[in-house]
Image (tube, rainbow, N blue to C red):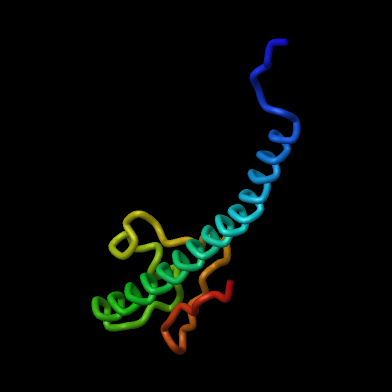
Length: 104
């Protein structure tokens, strides 16, 4: 009798189970990393907006009335205003002269 080379059904099932377990562990971590990256990008955008608000005040002697005063001026954002990765609009508080961080 000639021996056939190949994998048995049990061996294939073990491999599939191992790959499934690895995917079960890896996918949530990858998703969490993407969310963390978006949160960090949003915080960086808020810091950038606030530093440009300070620069606007230094250049003009007045605070911007709203974010449009700042974001529409290409001197402050030549590539366009930063956008929240989650799609939430940034809000400017005219009494504190700051953009508040989002709670994502």
